[in-house]
Image 1 (cartoon, rainbow, N blue to C red):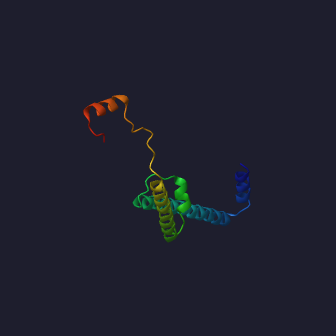
Image 2: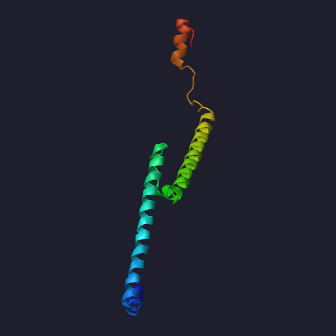
Length: 127
């Protein structure tokens, strides 16, 4: 509200040419801001595509916001670095999990009384 009042006072003090020039500058500034927003949106979409091409399908928009830069080449390098680091971390964790000892069986390999009796009666060798 205060900005609107200040804007009206500023315009009231200007002559016609000054008002036209001021309005033109305002529109040019707004146009530049909209172009920048559109470029950023396109860069975010391209970043999402690059992540998908790298095999990453489920990622948060926060990741995209971190990787995006106004420069396309810098954004590409950010995505490459991120995917390389992530792949290395996943590979390391998988290898670590595979190196762990196998779970120990909690079941006993002892014969039950009935199995012992059958073994003794039949004279078979137990495996």
